[in-house]
Length: 453
Ligand SMILES: [Zn+2]
Image 1 (tube, protein in one colour):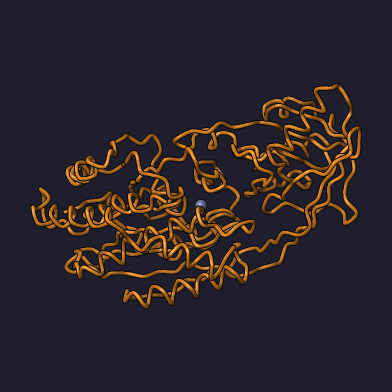
Image 2 (cartoon, protein in one colour):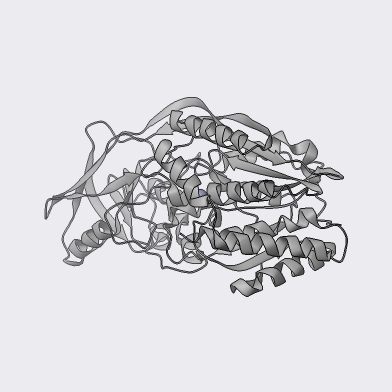
C-alpha cells in the first residue's frame, strides 16, 4: 500500500494550522518538510487498517459491527492521547442483506453471481421468475415506452471504464440509483444491472440505491461482470432468456450510527477548526480495507504523527471518523446539522476516501487570501510528483460535501483511482439524494473561506 505517500500530502494541510503569518514562516515550512520526509520513511498507517479490518471486519452502516468499530476507534484514539475523544450518535433507517441468488432458467440453465444493492426491497420469498429484457445503457432504458416491460426483468449493461480520476465511475454509477426506478416506471418486476466496476471476478459490487416516491419499489441486484457478459452473449444468439432471482433483504427500523471525533486543540485560534477524516462504515461484503479503512488509517496516522512531535497548531485539528457514509453520507449530514452553529469556524478540511493509491494531484477551491498558503503546500509536495490542478467541483470529500455545498472551501489530495474497486467512490456520483436524513439548514451558514492568517 502506498499509504505512506498519501500521508505525506495529508500532513501538509496541517500546515495551514501551523501557519503563523503571511507569508508562511520559515519555521512552518521547515516543520512541514520534516513531517513530509518522516512520513516517506515509514508510518503506522498499515497497522491501523490491519487492526480495524481484522478485529472488527465488515462494518455495515447502522449494524452492531459498525458500533464495534466506533468502540475500536475510541479506544485507539484515547490511547494515542488525543483530546475530546467522543462519539456523536445519530439515528438512521437500518437495512440488512439477506439471501441473494439467481439463475438462468432457460435457454442455458446456470447460476448467476448477484448481490442486492443497498436499500433494495426483497423479492417474494420464493423468488421472481421472468423474461429478461436487455438494454445496453441507462439512456436506452429511459427511451423505452411506458408499460413496455410489464412482468419482465430489466437488465442494463452500461459498462464503465477504468480511469485515473474515477470520472467514468462517476458517470455510470447513476444506473444504481436510477435503474430500479426507471424499470419500475415501465412495468418491470425486478432489475439487474452490470456491476459498476471494472474487475473481472465474480464478486459483484453492491452500493446504495434509492426509490422515487411515485413508483412502486422493485428489487434490484448487480450481476458480476463475467455473469453480465454471459447474459449478453446468450442474448446475442437471439434467444429469449428467463431468469429466476431471490433477494431477501430486510429493513431493520430505526438504528444508531455515529461519528467518532478526536482533536489536537489549537492555541491562539483554538476555536477555529481544520477537519480531516475518513469513514468508519463499509459495505458488508468485505472488510472495507480500501473503502475506507485506508482513509481512516491515513488520517489517524496524520494526527498521531503531529501529536508525537508535540506540535502546537494554532487552530484545532479535528479528526472525524464518519459513520454511515456508504448509505447516503448520513454521518456528513448529521455532523453538519449537529455543528451548524459553529460551521463558520470550520476553516478548511479534507476527507480521505479514495483508497490507498498514490496522490497525483491537489485541487482547491478557496478564497484569495488563502492562495499563498495553498501555493506553498503545492510547492512542498512537488518533489513527490504531485501536480496542482484546478477543481471544477468544490469538494473536500463525500462527508464534507454537505458543508461544501454551504460554502465550506474545497481542498483535496487526489489519489490515483486506476486500480481501486470503485464502490468506494460514491461521492463522485449524486448519491446524496439517497439520504434518509434531513440535510442541515442552509440558513445563516457562511464560511470563512479559509482565511488563513
Ligand atoms: Zn468510501
